[in-house]
Amino acid sequence: MASDVSELTINYEEDGVVTVKELDKIVLSKGAWATLIFRYQQFDKKKQAYGPDMYTIRRYQKRSGAYIPKSKFNISSRGQAEKIIAALQSWMD
Image (cartoon, rainbow, N blue to C red; front, top):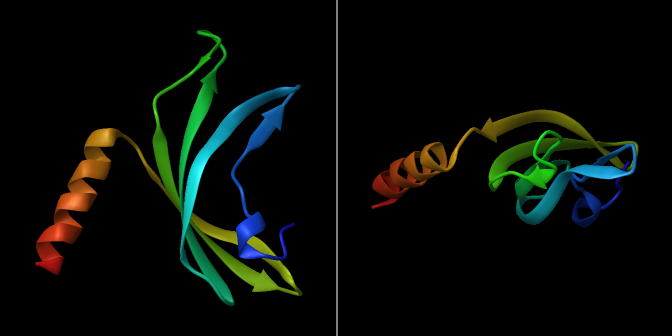
């Protein structure tokens, strides 16, 4: 488990294939509780190719010197991501 927030990743490998490929991450907050947003792609075994960009927000709690996952929210589509952005923008204006 990661001891530093910069080490956190959602990359996942199964049978020698990276099935979840992290493309980017942004640390939204760090400390005893860390919040990160990741951009990633999932490998489609049927098509033997990676799918479209996806996004997830993850919360981690640091315990005994290591970050452990506590919660996540997967943004299901580009359209949903755009709606979240629009809502936040309207509240910020």
